[in-house]
Length: 480
Image (cartoon, rainbow, N blue to C red; front, side, top):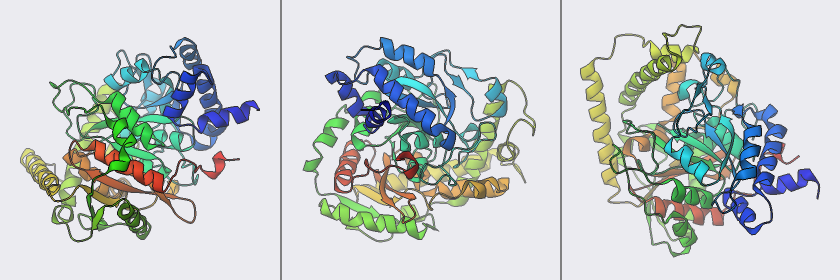
């Protein structure tokens, strides 16, 4: 077998499969790392998923990792954020100043430490939009990340580089984070699995005061998602947001044949926003699969979802964007000018029109959280919600690049509508690559479960994966 064929065979395995091959002695951790490096060198020039590579360090780590580690030698990418930081690895935040003078982690974040202790080998850092505040990944400082399924299309954001890397087989899993769908939106656009566990189940660096922030990975298979949740779930009950782990997520997937009869509601709109017809068709095509699993699928109007207040959400996004701008100033260590950031981030840092007062902000938070409680209480009636992951298929990179800043905010608000609602509630939600358009673009569908029911969500996802497998599907550019 040629070296290229051997590497292709390795990268076709998911993370669990690669780890099992190492434990059997079929391949070595160094083989896994070399195969991933070959894949990155083969496709990175086309896709642009990485902002930093550390191949020499990865090779050295692979040579010394103990084969009894649960994921010995399995390659991974860290997102360009602090949530998965590992000592010595730089952070750029998609910004032109930090691109030349990055922040270098002095301590491990909990997830970064857990990945390394489990034997994962970090090959580099994946791209994000500037400070992660966009649903498209083409930072001026680092260049665009292109969708492996259609190179002129967006990968989404903010975990866009991670999604593109997994979709093209550079790594089997890649770290991601989200405040409003930043794992699930890129997963939908790139045809991979994007899972957001219950809030507080996977730890974030403390002090974490964000009720919307979640931390996990993107991957290609449900068994990887379950195995990684078993690995990463945990943390201190003294954290502001913490959820106890069952430690049985992989087992729930393995025993998925014993599903109870579940009630599944269907939503094709959110807060008055109707999904694109292609996204609605993906939902429609999922319904017979759920019924084949014995689920009771219920159509109708669901007031808590229909009553989402987009105006309130947009106000909170604007305030959050200003906070992100101030946070970037702290990272850089000085006030920023228009030459230092992209127009959208400048716009977010300098809101137009009357300033939002403290009372207006507190009132908006109160309305949003009251709505979130109403949504969570609705799960007394249903077990799962089926919806589009994103309101539309991936747009072209050019269409995003040509937007004025005020148009970009509208795009972000719209594209986050279905996914971002469940960052507010903290419920587990997953985007599944069950559908592709005739032109080859993936269309993800989202399933949402009740707080703490990550096990049932993963079990249903595993059954859907078995009914309509996607692991064999690769972008055309990756099958040459």
